[in-house]
Length: 144
Ligand SMILES: [Zn+2]
Image (cartoon, rainbow, N blue to C red; front, side, top):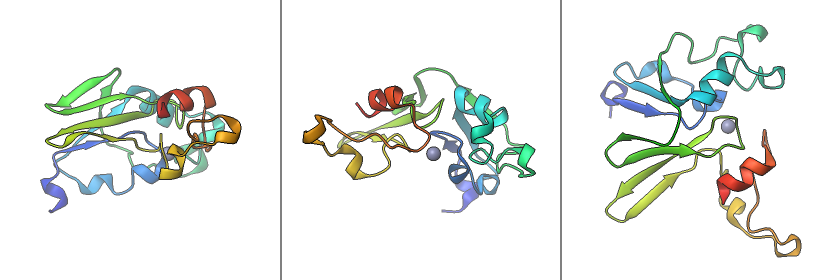
């Protein structure tokens, strides 16, 4: 599939490693959570590098792109819905895709790896919250 054939790109969040090459998709609508757009354009200094902030003389990959803003749980197209999963980042949202086999959740960085879903019985944890950039309370609730 050629990048020009992609008509919608949904961003779970706007960390640098999720936005590279987005300008290659010339026919796409860019859809992103409001909290992420706000943080990307006005990050805390702690996150300047994570959002490729211009204050560090880095041009973010999304410079000049126009996002469609999602504030709350929203059905983007029939069968594809975004919902809040904060913790890894301020505005992180996951995506549910309805399929004939059942719903599939694309968790983005709310769950980094399968290990995040393994329990830690010694600590009475049901799972591990990814620790990078995390708000532990929101991260726990998002994995839950
Ligand atoms: Zn991330």
